[in-house]
Length: 235
Image (cartoon, rainbow, N blue to C red; front, side, top):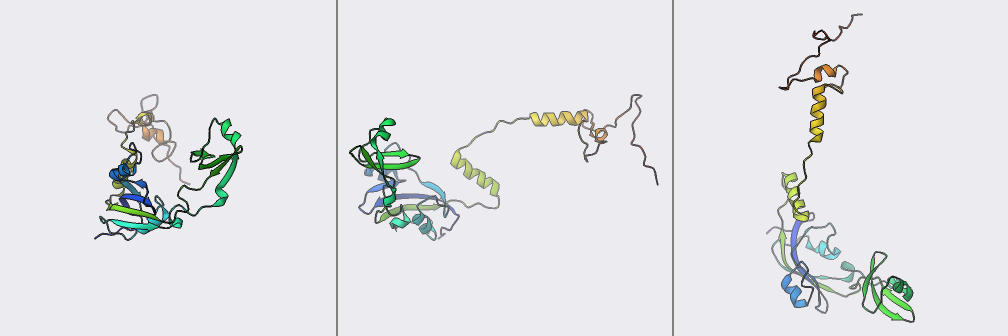
C-alpha cells in the first residue's frame, strides 16, 4: 500500500472534535448536519500539499507515513493544534470605542479588531474585556477522524501539464484573449526593413527586407541598381 510522503498532493476528508466530542470542523456533509453546522457551507474533501503548513501543525506532521485510502483517528495536544491560552492576549477596551463604530458588544460576540479576531468575554462599567486567543486555545485534546486519505496523481515527467491541471482545479479554468498587435508590428517593421538587422548590424536594413512571399530582397539605389557593401581595403 502506498504511503503519504512530505510534498505529496493529497485529498483529505476529516471530522474534527474537541475532547468533549463537539464537532467544530468537518469536510463531511452528513457530520456537519448532525453537528448543526451551517448548512450553506461547502463541505468537500480538501486538496493540499503535505508538510506545507496548510493544516494544523500536528495533523500536517502526522499525515506523513499514513497509508493511502485508509481511515485514522488522530489525537492532537494544544501545542499541536491552536496553542495554549495567553493571558497577554486578553485586553480591556473602552466601551465608547465600540459605540464609535456603531457596535453594541455582548459576551460571546466575535469581531475583527485591527485585522485580528477577538471574542467579547464581558461588558461592565464602560469597559469591554476582549480575548484575542483562538476560541479553542488551551483545549486539552482534539480528535480528528480521517474518513479517507486519497493520494492524488503525482507530478510526472510532464511537469508543466500536470501543474497546469492542478492550478485549474484550484482557481478554475480561464481563457486569455490573444493580442496579435505585437506580432503585426514586428511583421511591419521587418517588411519595412527598419531597426537592427538579423545580426544587429547597421546594414541589417538590406538583409531585413522581404517580398510578399517572405523572400529576402536586396536594397537598390535610385537608378535601380543593386547596392553592395563597400569592399574593405587591405593594409
